Image 1 (tube, rainbow, N blue to C red):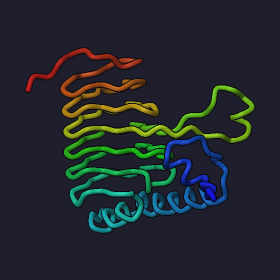
Image 2: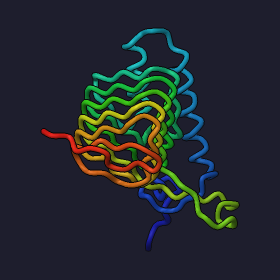
Image 3: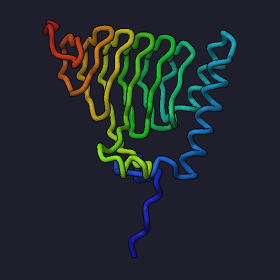
Image 4: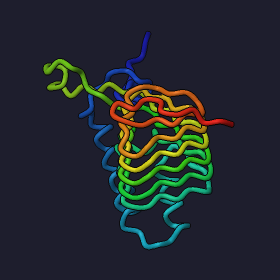
Length: 188
């Protein structure tokens, strides 16, 4: 007999799910509590790091995030070693958001790993469509960048400030614009 998947299982497996599921609402509440504690914490790096380790699915020991930071669930965020993120970033992590080692993210950057159906009836039923976001190692993301669901960014890539990333990009490029496009190759 086939067991029925929970909405959380559907969400983390990148299948359409009901966003107003009671368990998911409780998960969001827990993430908001941890984000609030982090955002209101004193300049105490060990305390902040312990809160982030409790919030995220995984993060390295060398991590620095400047508050405020906001996310939906937290447990779908996986950060590599030597990670830095500036002020006022938002991660909507219905699907996994994976960021490699040695990455920097500028202020007011948003990463969205969820979309919604185009038809109003499905949106009215509170259907979410999760699509993971993957960012490689040694990536620099400028301030005010928006990264949309389903995007992958290659290693050693630079995303210029205020770019809107609507599709995936390879290693060793500089991308910019709305929608973002390759403006330069980066030599090794």
